[in-house]
Length: 297
Figure (cartoon, helix red, strand yellow):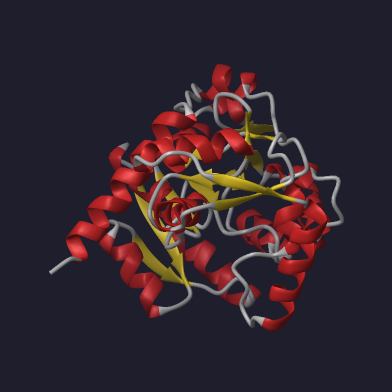
């Protein structure tokens, strides 16, 4: 199968590209810069130029790709869904898999929620043979933006702050498990017309995530509970004074929501078989250690 992949030079997209190539698929990757084109080429994809902010370039790229299937890993949170769907329809690219997020179910007034919900509506009302994959928090490799930071914090900080009581549930999914499920969705007709929540095997508390991370790095758990109100104040101030803050109040607020999802349909239709968090965080720590060792003279 010849697959047109958007977002293939990013974190999740890179894993999807490797999975596609391991299945023997031919991949054309959308690139908007020479750096992303080089990354795609190194991963075994044929780069094709296109910028999601330039609808004409996307129309041309999708037509020139001559693909059998679109896998859109590029974020749906920036309002590009109408451009992508229209280009796919115009190119006769009937089969399409779109990666969304379980964040559309948040009760918080997240600015991107409205855009993402509208994006899914654009997909489901299209003429495409669509599938939507909604992952939870993604982790599992040194370049993830979530738990690799936590590993670094736990590794070098004597005591880690625990906002609130850490009792709310999370269900993080390992990026390799997610990528495999995305590719199987593209390969299976049973997935057409369905949206799947794709998560880890079970919900675990944030406190458990901390404890498992401590164990994975070989340290005793040491954290101190911080009142949520005080933590919001500190992070809110930090967010205002730092140009590109690594923590935001919105991320903190998400820790007070239970984010647990039924994955039985993904197990049934897509053979989604996610690894336990304990195994996933240990593999992440091992990958980080290997990367650090490689950089040491």
